[in-house]
Image 1 (cartoon, rainbow, N blue to C red):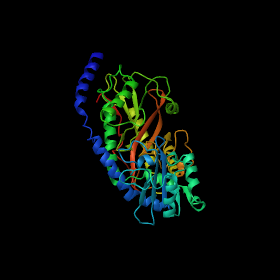
Image 2 (cartoon, helix red, strand yellow):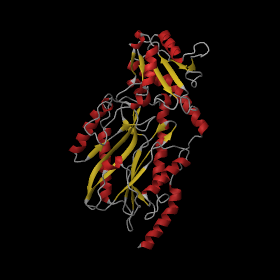
Image 3 (cartoon, rainbow, N blue to C red):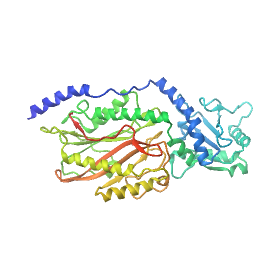
Image 4 (cartoon, one colour):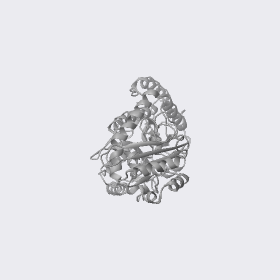
Length: 444
């Protein structure tokens, strides 16, 4: 039996060399930079004016120092800037609704094509006073700055710079300073049509990397460890010229007495284990491309000698995980908050006899991005603050959750842990590159 099994593995290995579709084309660095700058300019023309009108903030100040960058300013810098320079001040002003934005850089040089230099140190040596002059000239109704109790993405103005700003403003201008939290979140979470198309490309790449890793090209059962597979994913991502925004995890559930503590897995990396026939594998990984991120979790099963398909009890368990996904995505409606969707999805899933845990988050310029938080693994009753933020159109989400399922054949409870990118267009939500519909078989 062992010889026959090894032969099957070898044959399958050579087949798998050709069974994976090629990755979609990944642009070279120069073309990536050009596209990033085009998209940035487009966002200032289409996305930002609408959000400034929605939040009723007519002036937005983004102030940041080199290597202590505000999360927002990093999304506004040109592609060739790896960081802010000295103290970089960006001023965005909308004179009236529907008007073209006025964008200025209170800096020694232009900040890309969008922000033109508005400070000459030879005529005004004090950068902060020049900023105050511009504010006085525009005389905005509200001055938004990045301060937030609920979103770290929108809390990028440090205390020292806030004090310097308030120190140069007149008392009447000081009274106009407000939190730009909703403006910053809106800017970060809203995707353009071109970004939506890029996301399809990006999610397809991520799915193909996962599929290739869940094969005999990356795994030798009885030899490879979970850590070997983690580093295979890291190397494959690097080989493609992409980056990962967190170190991947690979873990195993199997027919042994040990219970899988999914709560512990969030705070402690899974132990290194040798991958064996009969193992249910799980991967969690994310990639970054053209400033956008993915966050994906999928499963694979290593066939035992004599098996030619996934055991039916695991197939049924996987369907329960998909059912929890369905209960959550059915809740997406304009204006609903993350907490409202969480509680409704949990109630419906439990009524069906499922054991769900939901911890879904927005995805975009950050892996755990700005927007409505839909549960956390340790906050299943709702998340104050970020969970109270409502759904807006043209936003993307990592539908992240798990279903606990008792496997009689293993005499233990396992977790089907799933995560897939989805896009909400204001009317419906759909998986950007589909979702995993069935567990991968190794070999296949």
